Image (cartoon, rainbow, N blue to C red; front, side, top):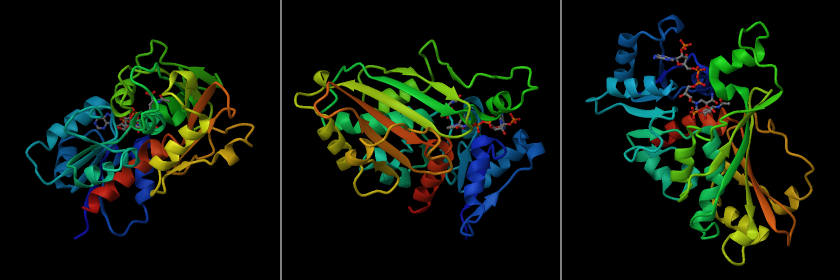
Length: 310
Ligand SMILES: NC(=O)C1=CN([C@@H]2O[C@H](COP(=O)(O)OP(=O)(O)OC[C@H]3O[C@@H](n4cnc5c(N)ncnc54)[C@H](OP(=O)(O)O)[C@@H]3O)[C@@H](O)[C@H]2O)C=CC1
Ligand SMILES: CC(=O)N[C@@H](CCC(=O)OP(=O)(O)O)C(=O)O
């Protein structure tokens, strides 16, 4: 029997992209709800309880309600793409490459929290350096990022694309999260293994999909002997033996004059770079991804496949 998959929120931005990735899958049975019924709680409850894996592509509150709808059903497994469960101790964090043991945890989990788009980049850069002892306890980490506007879901897509929209945004690039309390900070801190919450400054550019996440560091505040080269080597070692996260060779990155935030749009991979001058005082760590690829829908499908491999 084919595993039954239900995407709750399948008509939204993340849900549509998950559906597109499954369009040619003959090994799955997709349970579906008509767009007009997408908020019909009774129908959703029925479909959620009929699924082997339910992928929640809903706002946080609706995700919590969906989880409550399957309480007592020991068969259905859940992947939640919202922020609701990412720091919950009984949920597996769905970033398979963040740790050698993580893909097995995801494979065997009943509940998987799909990471946020910005945290995928930030944790991808920070966690290996914490584990290698290069980034010391208490280092004041900062994270600066730009996202494609699809990161804000249907509402922001309309604001950016529809000039007639009453809340149309005409800015080609804008900062937000100005109170520094973005909902992604807790998961960056927890899964980045940080003692102190990072200062996180996100922004949005006038392109639909793509993302750059930057973590600049002072070398003389890191562990003694930290250099651009050994930071890069620690990332290379961490990401050996997998094919989703690429650590770009220094010989390649030192020739680059600019980074295009949209380079990986439509792809489910992530590239990590270490920028700076050999012998210099600073490095800038950079992650490049698609907010809807490895940052959301691509990661959700990767997690579903891991869970189905159990
Ligand atoms: N966009 C992105 O890049 C990323 C998004 N995410 C997360 O994925 C989740 C979905 O976001 P996104 O796809 O962008 O959002 P969208 O607004 O594009 O889609 C959300 C979908 O959920 C539906 N929905 C909302 N409330 C309910 C409810 N109470 N019951 C049933 N359906 C409901 C919406 O219907 P309606 O049209 O009626 O509102 C819509 O179809 C969010 O938690 C978001 O934070 C995670 C990573 C990246
Ligand atoms: C551009 C934009 O608005 N981005 C979203 C995050 C997108 C994302 O990762 O979503 P979740 O963490 O909600 O799952 C934001 O800042 O809230």
